[in-house]
Image (tube, rainbow, N blue to C red; front, side, top):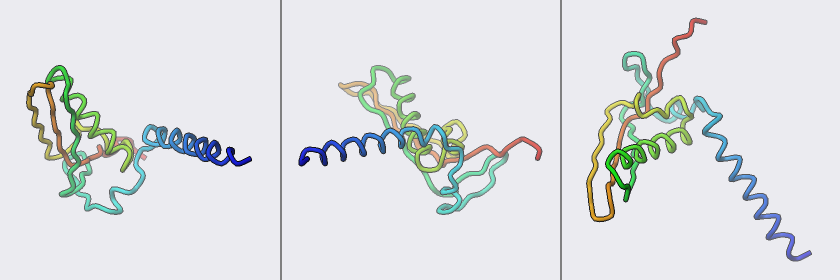
Length: 123
């Protein structure tokens, strides 16, 4: 019976980790953004005012690949924190990107304020 506890803990951890991987895919807007940040309207979007997220990549074979990985990093973290409505880098405010080439390949860093598009549906 002594060996059951480590197995039980590992199984519980695996179930928890698997459920957390699904959360960003199911989320739309978890309400956290408006609860902890100032939000302002910018055209057809709501944007976090003065709060930036960063996404990075390293050692990619091309600049294009490094940029795609940095954007994916930004989007993944933003979706986890606020929900997928906020996690489209193409809608981010105050975007910036910087890429460099080194001996191990390309690295990029992107920054932007999370924004979400206002619904166009009439209610």
